[in-house]
Structures are given as structure tokens and as C-alpha cells.
Image 1: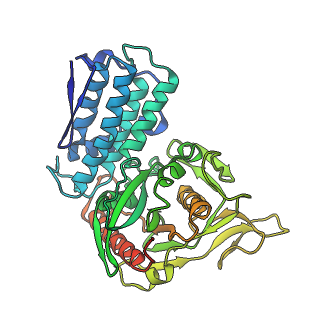
Image 2: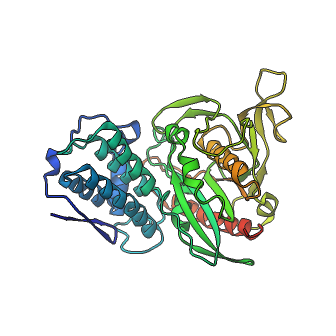
Length: 411
């Protein structure tokens, strides 16, 4: 028997399945991650309901309960991850029904739906043997597929840009948080920009605010297939209040709690299966055309060439702030973009650039913090929040257009 899987406007037919009762094939007492346990809170549920994305997890659960082999499970996940990504991109870009009264530009429905899916995979009781390694492979495939990481495609005859964004983070402080860098990549994915040097196709991917996937090589494995053929690589994350920063230097250090409340305070490890520079440098530098970006009129938020780092200078032991960048022989404690996962993705991406194609324009941009309106401590959205997100995404598109318009086309 076959089952039709509906996500957004797409229907997938999964072979080798039969009907089953979802209530009977999940162990809801099985372990879930810290991130996944937040899904049932009121704000995530409201965001899912008001976007229409609350319909996806029940369908996914019915499919899982109907599967009768590990092979069918693998095929189903390979279909549904990319379908969820496309459903989110389509909603943001205005294709198909809005599904509810939540603004189309919102990145949060994708985040919370993905967590429902991965929790379902962890708690699923299949009717056939499934090893821990096979279950982990299913979760990983769902992650990469639903983040657009394995669906980057470029048509011929255009220049090519790859842009990344992040999930929401610091959710224990405010569960309502969005990430404008995530909204940015959903709005940009698959678009063609007009520049003085011709059309530019933009492809995007989303990344988690989690250390373990980074340490396992998610960043490098996502970028490596394209880094030799794109004209520019820009990583983007949420940074400081009221400003945009082009981060000049990335440091070999990460610290702070991630979305699963896992912490680090160590040098950034590079996977053994990717090209890299040896010995591993303390600092790597942007090759984005930052002077052109800063000089351009792109929107309401001021744009800065940020050069301040935290370092332990040669022969010393105490970290100090160096406003003009790292000094010779110093040890990194924070890049210009800090010491969190935004600095880490920039470090990994630009180190990979240096190992494979040093001439590639690549670097990191921090958006402003996406803030709610004054006095709003409970509502998941408000007019100030919506306008701020719109203005950030619009300005980031302008910055991307300026940046790619000032780089030499790849040959």
C-alpha cells in the first residue's frame, strides 16, 4: 500500500507503507532534546497554529506509523525534509495560502515544526528493527533536508551566491524569539538579483544554534560542494541592537550555552574529513568587499566595519580587547563577531575558503537584534516587530546586492 504525504502544495507518495494508528507507535516518555521539549509551550503552539504549520506534524506521524521497513523510512525522510523547507520558503515568498494570520515573513514556524519532526523520530516505535545508528541517520537527514542544506541548485548562465542563516536562540530567556537571519534566507532562497554585472542567483541554507552538528562538520559539508563554483559566500546571524556589522576577523574560540544548553569554552575543532589549513590559524579574515558595503546606502540601520577582537597577546595570559584587530602571535578569545556560533560559522567558512579557494569573497554579516514593541512581553508578534523584521530583511538584500556587485565574477 502507498501513502500520499502532503506538505504545503506538494504531495509525495511513499512506497512500502500501510496504515497505522499514530497513538500506538510513539513512546512519548522517550528522551527528547532540550530544544524539542520547548515545542509544547504556549508560544510555539500559537506560532504553529497561526501559520497553519500545525498540520504538518500529525501528517508526518501518520507516515512514520505506516512505514514497514528502514528503507521506506529513509526514503520518506529524504522526501519530507526538503518538502518542509520548500513549504517554509513558499510561505515566506508568498506562494500558496498563508495558513493563518501570522505574517508570511516569519521564520519561526519552520523552526518549531522541525523540532516536532525530530522529536517524533526519536520517540517513534517502528514495527521493524531500527538501530540507534539508523535512527540518528534519519534525524540527521531530516535536519539537513529541512534546512535547505542539500537542495542548493544553480541554473547555468548566472552568477552564484550562497547565503546562510540561523535558527532562533536564547529561547529560555524569551520563547517568542525569532532570528532575522533565518527570515532573511527564507526570503532570499532561489531569487535572482539584478546587478551591474548581470543576474545573480541566490541559494540559501539554515543552521542550528547547536555545537555538536558544527563539530561534526555540518558547516563544511554543506559549503564544500559549492565553494569552488560560487561567486560569493555570506554567512549571516543576529548580532547587536540597532546596527549591522560586517565582521572583519573570525577567531578560533567558541563559548556559551547553545539551544540545548550545552556549553563550550575551547578552541574550535575542525573535522578530519574536510580540507583545512595546518597549523590551524587563530584568526581568519573576511574577503567580502566591506568598504563598499559600509559606504553604500542600504537601509535604516547603520552599517559598520567591525574590527574589535578579544585576544591573549603574545607572551601574556590575560584576555584584552584589541579595537583594531588581532596583534601578531595572539591567541583568540573572540572574533569581531564574538565567540558564539556566529563567529564559529564564520571561522569555519572562511577557513574552508582559505583551504580550497582563497580568492573567494566570503565573510560574515550580523543583523540587528529583532525587537518587539515597547511593553510587549507576552504577544508573539506586534507591528514594531513586523516592521523591524521587514526592514532588516530588505536591508540585507540590499547589502547582498552591493556586495556581489563589487566582486569579480568567477571564471
